[in-house]
Each structure stands twice: as structure tokens, then as C-alpha cells.
Image (cartoon, rainbow, N blue to C red; front, side, top):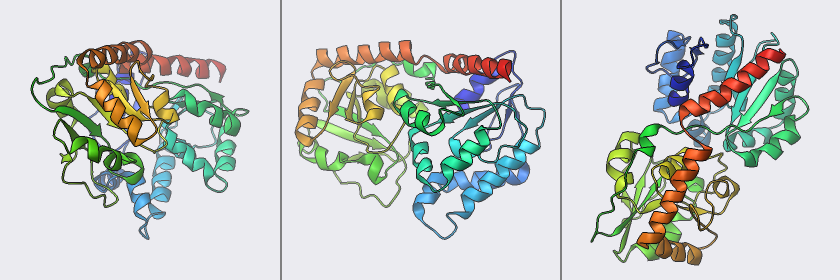
Length: 349
């Protein structure tokens, strides 16, 4: 979201006001975060974010999202001069005021779980009926579900997020004579990891390849000793230290995602992707072209071997970079896509 805010702030015709966790904002964007909200959001982020808190199952679990919604609603009411609301994630639309001002709502795959909660569709539809709304999932595969839930009260228009130019600038230089380095960058939860450890063990213990794992440890996951676990990692570290020397990116996630950002960044860097076969991955990884999809351990092992061939790896990586540049572009391209929707909403409101 930091990249999106920066790109939107560069649009000359826009006066951007931001309610988000505390952090540096680019000029001329202005924070509308109160001091008390900033303190609470900073503590929430330090605890792993709202989703992690919900998964923890502690007694305060349901208090946090309710407080968050109250804070967002207060921010809406405190800024009556807004012409349009750009809302990230469906639940943040719930406290919108009854002022009929248009809204653009972005959606990730994880948001679709929200629709399974009792009365949630009814509540969201009530909010949308009072205004012009465009719902923007960040991947096409979510469109049918959202059309079924809200197609009569909102326009559904998929919009891809962007990619920072730093990823496109990476030039890969695999280290000759060293084991093939495969990277997995993810939050360490059961669904995000999927069968990664189970399928990889027999293929990575021999020493001809290494699995390097990055991300925050959550849900008490036990990392096997043969995995090179590095903990959380910054984008700058991936850009400078890891992506240039990697063989490819692995994700065997079972998590309902939109278009996983780390996969897009890896493709922009020219890394082929080895992924589990699921809608979120099949919309990015074109089997045999920009990477490979697998359904079981045997297919996974065969894909590792095939993608470690130098010519095949280079061909897939180049195709992945071309696809990312053509279909996704940069965050400025993303901002332009949203700007067109803003103009359409304001023209019709």
C-alpha cells in the first residue's frame, strides 16, 4: 500500500488524504490519522496485524476488528470534503457514512472468506446501495464470486496492483558450481506453506539444491533443520542479495489469495515460478512458459529438475519478466488504472 499511496500522490489532479498505519507519506499526501489511532495501529502491526490476531483466537480477537471499524468510520466522518473513497478490503467499507459519495473498493482473495460470515453480504450490500461503487479485485478469478454477491449493486472491475521498478532492474547471475538456490517467501502458516516441507524433503536433503525460506514465523510452525530459514526479510534484501542468485521461487500455498505480490515481483525479476495448482497461481504461472504448476510430490520433483536446466530456466524467467511488464507494469500504471475508475465514478455521481 505504501507504493500505491506514493503512485497516487504523483497524480497532479489529486489531493490525497490517507488513513493507514503510521509511516512516512510522500508529498503532497496528507495523513488524517489521529494520535490515538496511530498508537493503536502501531501496536496492532507490531502484533502481526489484524489477520494474525484473528487467527490467534485470544479472547480479545473480536474486540480488535470492531474497534478498527469504529476508528475508520470516525475518519470518514471527520473528512466530509472527500469526493471519493478508495477503500482497501471489503470490511473497511462497512462504516461508510450515509452521504452517497462514490467508492472504489479493492479486494484480495482472503476477503472472500468475509462473505461467509453471517449477514456480511447483507450489510455490505446495504452500504453499496446508497452510492456508486466499483469493486476491484486484484485478480480475474474472483470476479465471478463478486458478481454473484454484488453484481446488481456494484460494478466489478479487476485491477492488478503494480510492481516497483527495482524488481525489473534485477539481473540474475546464478553462482556456478554452487547448489541451486530455491526461494520461498511467505508468512509461515499452515495454509501459506502448504505441503512445502513434506514435498521438498527428499529433493533438498541431497545437497544439490537448497531451499531458502523467508518470512515471519506464525502459528507455531516447526521449520525442519534442512531448510535454510532466514526469518523476515526486507524487499531491499531480496533485490540485492537473493533474487539475483536464485534458481526460482517456490510457493505451494493453499491460501485463497488474489495475485500474490511476491510472485509478481519475482516474475519482474526474471525468476520462474514453481507453484501449487490453484486459481490464484494459474492466473500468473502459465505451465511450461513462465514456470510450472504441480499437484503432487512427483510432479514437484520433476519440475525442480526441469527448471534447473540453464536454458529452460532462462527461457521461463525471460517469459515471466515480459508478462509482468506487459500485464502488470509499475505502480504508476496501477495508479492510472484506478484514476480512470475515479473519473468514471465522479462523472456518474
